[in-house]
Length: 476
Ligand SMILES: Nc1ncnc2c1ncn2[C@@H]1O[C@H](COP(=O)(O)OP(=O)(O)OP(=O)(O)O)[C@@H](O)[C@H]1O
Ligand SMILES: [Mg+2]
Image 1 (cartoon, rainbow, N blue to C red):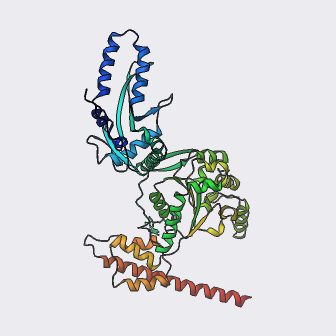
Image 2: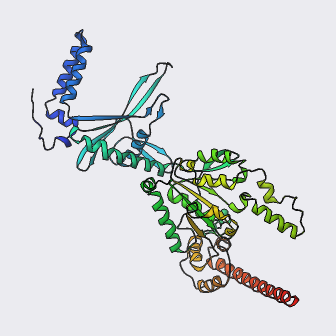
């Protein structure tokens, strides 16, 4: 037998196969002898135990197997799928046989019985994929038990089992979140149903001052990385946003951009369809982590305090209407008994912490109508005002819609936007393509005309209001 001693310096970075080759296939010989032994020796079970102990003793490598299915109910193991995702980014450059799947984009992972080598902090380790075909006991069928096997030198045990595996699992989970198909949930009663979320809005295409946008982006990044911070200060990992401003100024568009930016799912909660606080709690417990829960037009979702109802009845009486006849808003909300305290409980109660990493976003056209308890800091941490289109927002729209960075007509538009209130939605409408020729001047001129018209209308209205005020004062 030709036995060579491996260099101890390189021992821990040597592939197990190379190591055995260098040691003159000692183990292969032992295995052969063992096979012979098994066949002819009657006390093989007893000896097998000692033989395995001996092999383990002389083998300097540790192997860890991560099986795909775990538990009595054979659920897919989280560790397995995290490793699969982690290796999909690392292995696709090394492995020769890959499996392909499509989530948000093409995802490649190692095929069965492939092996790739890695290095972590100068230490070599090997990942291999494999499967065992198992006979099912209860059902007369076979199932395939997939696994990933990690091999490393036993001198590196602490480094690999500790920091390395921690990194693999975390990175793998993050890749999974990035690659998954995100969902848009809506509730009918106390049940969520979902479709694939495919809104194309991004912060880049959102017409808003660059500085204001950056503040929001930074806030979102800080939030998404603050798991440890929230745990340390003992607060649920969630953040409340209140977006307010006139219709068509981009509140809903911004929520879609936030979801795309963070890679979160979106839950569009229709409060008027929720019967009571119990149903609300059920719905909210079912929301997953890494999600945005949005409640649009919160001011007209529910009659939270009763005060508003009284106020409204008073106004209707003043206007000579019968307060008993329900308006549209009331008809919508009368089936719902969700209360303000029910909603507040959800925002800062115990079960809002379930799952963690959630944004709660409210939108309204009338921030002044909201109950102060609902929007105080700590509940709605960040208030973002959406306003009429200014020149900076217009330039974003012109770039998106017309691919224009500048144009001689921009100066006129800039002047008009200072004097006129037009929403980004209306501006965008004028920038939509009008003809196949792609002549952008047509859109810009159409916008200028609309701005001039709006300006004139506003001037006439202001004159009319002034006259009314004058006549009221002269009456007094
Ligand atoms: N700031 C913006 N940036 C880019 N597009 C915008 C912006 N504001 C409005 N739009 C365009 O106008 C349309 C309507 O905007 P959006 O639904 O976001 O308004 P909103 O503020 O949510 O209105 P509402 O208060 O009525 O719900 C969007 O589809 C988008 O194309
Ligand atoms: Mg909206």
